[in-house]
Image 1 (tube, each protein chain N blue to C red):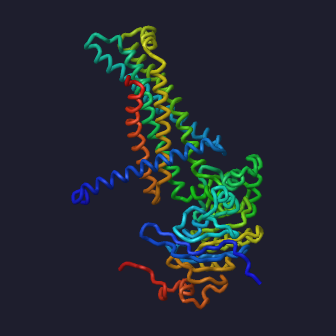
Image 2 (cartoon, chains in turn cyan, orange):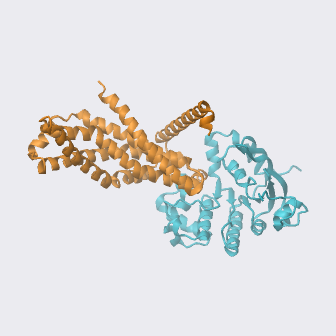
Image 3 (cartoon, chains in turn red, blue):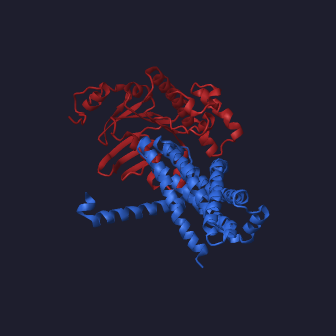
Length: 258
Length: 261
């Protein structure tokens, strides 16, 4: 029996900014239709990894395959076609201040001309309902929303075009634990409904267990462990377990100046 | 310190850095212009920026033009009176305004208003991941953010300069007729008798170039900003200062081209 081809495959992904090597040969397989959570401390290269997959940063070396196709060898048109199938929830929402919420939510559909402006409001109301927001929120400006509402609008924007790969950049950062759990619940629901592949980066262990099927630990630019997200905290890998428990002592040493 | 220890290397580094920046800005401008020629086009954004530049800059440009025309009339009268050439006041006012002061002052005013606003808006979008978000939403940021602004700048500045020309001349007329003893019809006749189409057209061409430069520097500086609020503030300052210097430098170049013969 042959193993199922991964949705996303990273091999030897490397990236340095000046002297600082952020990714140092990342190898990772992400299964189609599953949730992968990439864990790691601040500065471990989590965001750079997903920015490389999204095409926002060009890696120095390595390969990125999506559905077996080499992303780095794609023409601009092929990359644009790939971007059409991808959704992204940014850490701070990254909502467009100059546009009302409904236009933010339907931005991709409008950009792809899959919907007219006249119908976009109704569509936005429909998607906002999926993330638990009232249709009236659509007329507000992003600046008028609380942090939790901004995350939900960001989630609505990420799923409005029904992508088959969705990236979540620290979806619960800055939220209280209850709102974090609400957002995680919404993420699980929408990913399941769309049948999408979800890639999340986080250092919130509770969130990682809730939204992930698989997990990978990134440390100093390398993947040091992969396994089921449910086992986080009792993986047997000293590095992962220390990170999951938040222990000061262990193989991961913070570089603090004294 | 480096400049003292190894001045040649420091100067070389500065020159290379300047060349790199000029090249990068030129490529940025070319890419922005190329998006004006390829669909999709963002007409709604173009109109929004056009209103932002042309309509909302009207008061500041109008006030600048009126007072400049008034001062010009007073100063040229004072100077020409020493040679018994007071009659040339109207000519000096209209030629100075249309050829030079209208486009340059309107350009500097708009650089302060719009260059800063564009750099701050795009800079904030850069540091809050909104530009990356555009890419993930199947939208080219250069096409969406830069191209409509460049076109709006090129269209709006000539319009503002036409207004500045008219109001500058009227400022001179106001002082000429109320303070300097000119007759209204005589002042206006002297104004239009010596005015040539080329005087106005050259000012409008300058305005279009200045409009491009202002919006280009606003977009470029905003696009390159990093490091949070401080980075956005620095980008805003750089946008205004670089656009103002470029306006004055290009004014000389364009004046050479139009009037050297």
